[in-house]
Image 1 (cartoon, helix red, strand yellow):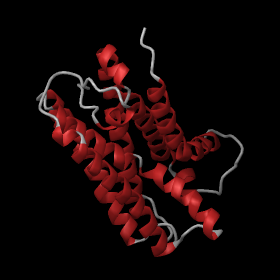
Image 2 (cartoon, one colour):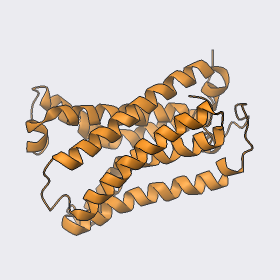
Image 3 (cartoon, rainbow, N blue to C red):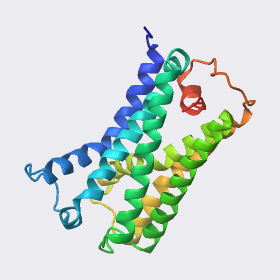
Length: 235
């Protein structure tokens, strides 16, 4: 039986809580679409075509939570089969999240106040980028190139966690200014959150993953910071 260290529990809890910030609103929306009470502002797009919304919420939630579990060194070291199984689930969920996000961006009509040309273009580019990165991660791990696999998965995870950063900083924005950003300002805010995530991923890749030698062995370090970025073990 594997016992997680205190640092691993801290890492897991922080990532899960970070992921649950946008997931909470998504789960409430799912309850509404299932016939539950209305607790959020009305969304005519979700009511008119609920399937992609439901699949996007579920895919994004599973992708973020599975990713958090993948960062545990004890799991990778002592239960590689479980790690690979969760990795496969994570990739499927990530592809579902990216494809449904792309679908909604292309076929839903959004008011200019919540999506302008900048945000529309960013969502298209990032959806394709996430799909490509997950595909490349599969190719890399099959070629036993774990450094490239880890870098691709981390970049895809940074894109997938964009909603978490947007929700967290959005709450801070509302507390500071008393209202949500709209129009072009909202576009810039949303894109900036993705940029921050991507920059953080690139820094971590440069500091840790890029310095690793190609290896088929699991990393021996146990620190959560290293675990967060060196999940280049097989899916």
